[in-house]
Amino acid sequence: MANEPWLEADQTEGAQARRADLLKGLRQVQYWIDEALAQVPDETALWWEPAAGVPSIGARLQHILGASRRLAAYALAADPDPESLAAAARSDWTPQMLPKASLAQEVRDFFAELIHRLEALPEEAMDELRPLGRKRLPVRRWTILHHLVEHAAYHSGQLILLVRLYTHHVG
Image (cartoon, rainbow, N blue to C red):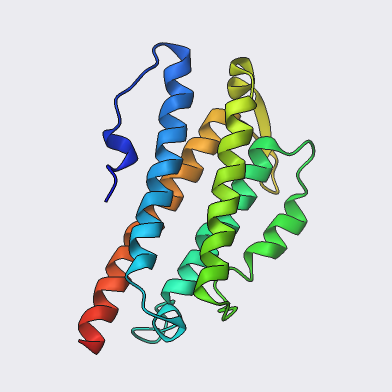
């Protein structure tokens, strides 16, 4: 098993360190997701719901992907449409019953593209105000991206717990 990304030595200082921390956070989330999914044996486990009202591993992964896409759109898109982004949010938790490999690859592809876009973003752009949500509140790009990492990390922890619950449920 490779080291967790947060354990990698820091190579930057000053303003560049802020971006490096953000990128490290995204890589850490991907690491947690990959580690959790490696323990999910099949689609039955992926879509298992431990109790009424408790979304499955797959639905939670869909939400991580959907919410991360929306937050990335607010942070990076030229003119994000809050109405269409809000409409997309309504389907996050509805199980799509995708194969594990497809859903995992979709998440990996999204995070890889996001990391690539952030690496190319000029440093001064990180502090630009961006319109967020239906109220179009002015929020710094950095803050939106930081929340994206926090939100994805929060739900990644839930993935890890659900995998453990499933393992004990069938074990």
